[in-house]
Length: 148
Image (cartoon, rainbow, N blue to C red; front, side, top):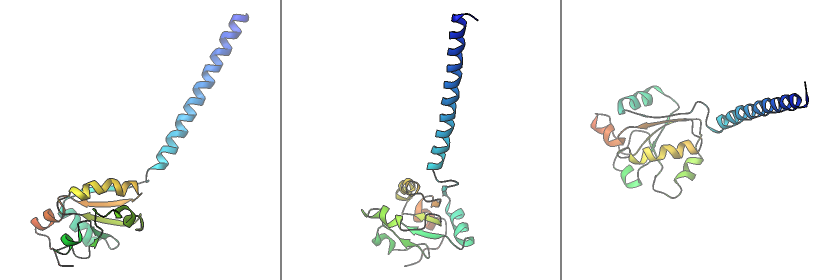
């Protein structure tokens, strides 16, 4: 091989090594990014019927009513705990909860609970079930509402 052949061969090896390094870095980056999101997190919106089944068969779930205290006092899903979505301390109040427990979440119509899903995800909650259409849909489909 002449001088030109050796230089060409060295450039080819340098390109291959750079490519291998870039691929290794990309693979490592994918592993690091995958570790940033909750592994196996389940955040879903379900019908009142599906939520009622979850509440009936689960023993460790907590029901969170994220309406205002006035709305909460008008009627709740039995056993629900009130954490007001409009309170400035909403995220702080969620932060103290067990992030690996299963929560069934609702508001009046599904608007606030839908918005809250990203907060739950950002805080690292792993199992959130939102009731589609909130307590209004829950009640309108024949499910019981009780006074707190």
